Length: 406
View 1 (spheres, rainbow, N blue to C red):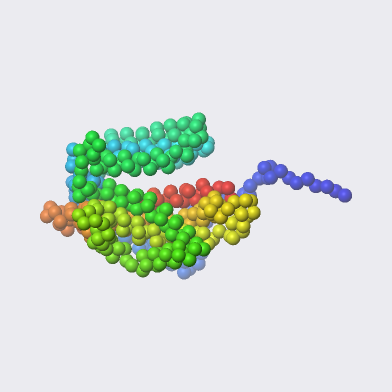
View 2 (cartoon, helix red, strand yellow):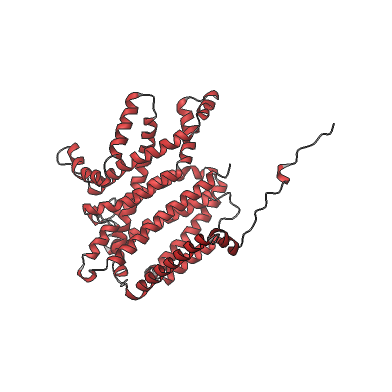
């Protein structure tokens, strides 16, 4: 009898992947037959014409001075210029913590500043110097870029020496939120600034981050409540989700502005920004609950049964076994809901809140900039696209990290 020994899997070479040059790829995907070739040519011509017209308008017709002349309004609304240092401190805090978190999460990577990262840093720094819009503040922006890199390096070194650093990151981010509110609103040694002076991109980001942070735990709780075995909890969760999902967001925002004070003692009237955040949170949590519930349904029943057989009770098996897998599956839908919430902040302009779109409308009301709709809305659209794409890119990176073990 002949015995065979299994080969060591580590010695087996990975399957070779055939490299396709651009010409072969184009022939296969764009010019495979006469119809595909015709469609490729027609679409290419249309894209070229549209691009040429947009560039011609941008460089010859558009009057871009409306953007740099009102950049302070777009960024921070009616915040007084002598207090802009607070905005820069807030940005430095967020950027520094972001770099530190990057370093902590990338401590096991062979190199933190690879070629692509260095190229990205170089492009960003060059843009700070070359683009006229950022050129007046280029020294400060370059300092923030250096702060990001230094914080990332420091976070990586510190997390390698102390493994518990990563466990404290959520706490640090939680505390930083209140530091940002303190810097923005003043008090406790700083000159107070009324909330009607808040505005622009700062207010948009503040409302979006607050709404996302609040709607996530509420949505998870509603999703678990809808799958609960307790009839009262289950039907209350179903009633809330279906009621909110059947009403437009603008209606909830208007009702929040009018009805929330009715449930409070006489004379107590919450701030408009607080009421707007509550309305956004209540609306988004209902949709997020359905996204999480879909993730819970995708987890096989055998996972719960295996957890119970190992001695875990139902709450522990839900927290440590089922819910992590459900959230991992629902990441694309959850991030999509976060992006939708960020975009929904534009509806608050109808209530007179001077967030980014509201500031744009105020600028267009200035007689000096009447008719500059394309420039203002294009600038606002680019800003919204940047942050939405950043969230989408971050979600893909998270998925890649979570799927490495499979």
